[in-house]
Length: 187
Image (cartoon, rainbow, N blue to C red; front, side, top):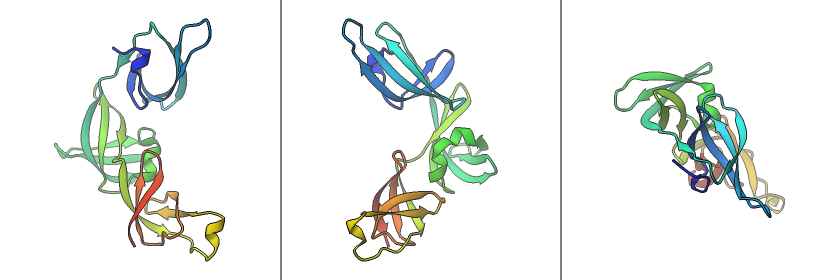
């Protein structure tokens, strides 16, 4: 059991018979009142975002999450197919459980599948992944005075800001949690 002071961003909790992930938290202390923790929570089953305020006296149940390693195989319409790395069993997850991870999901990527009471609730990707740049506008001399970044398209079709020196066919590393460019691996 947790108290409001134990809550962390990305932690998964049980609240009102649902599973939520803590997206953000803000400690609020008003004069003449007890402090509270204002949070933004994401329901991992429905995908809806809700705000919830925890009092000092609240007891919060941490969700028991099972993790298993799997490999992404392919996407067909709104279903994503995976293979369990231990049992080699194949299964599919609907798009709503993949969420924003879709933009960084490429074939043969190893992911962690999250389960709660035998129900799939989501996936987590490696924090940093390498991607091939499939489209990058040419940089022009003197362009760095206005901006030091340009928008490039990676092999999954997602567009990301990258430095001007990044060219088509370069391999770049991206932080999948923040969705930002990290470094160029090769050109």
